[in-house]
Length: 156
Image (cartoon, rainbow, N blue to C red; front, side, top):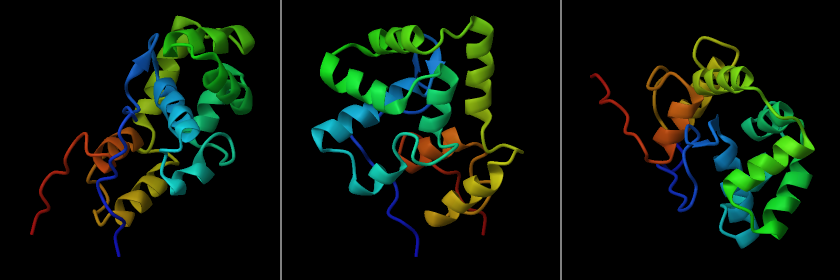
């Protein structure tokens, strides 16, 4: 039986939205803030942060060379803007170059398309009752699952 779809979570932006040119970071900050406010769906808690290796949160923290727990604490206690939090991450981890950000963005935006993430993408599509190939990337799946885009009609 497919999972409920779409998953609508007010206050959670799409993964392609950028903060200072970096994709996904803002979404991770949104999840931290929603969890702190008690409004992140319960099923999402286990996948937050770096508990799941190679999750997007984990990859983002690795890219920035910061610990998720430190970023979470700074986000919750400081009241900083998204841009200020990314600057904090650059200062406490590493400052990515423009070229590194370009590579990061391209990798993340294409994840699931003809790579080791394709199987997981197809599993996630099946979870919501859609066939493989409905979308080509995990970012598109997230936007589909959260109602920001719609699936093309299924052929009969």
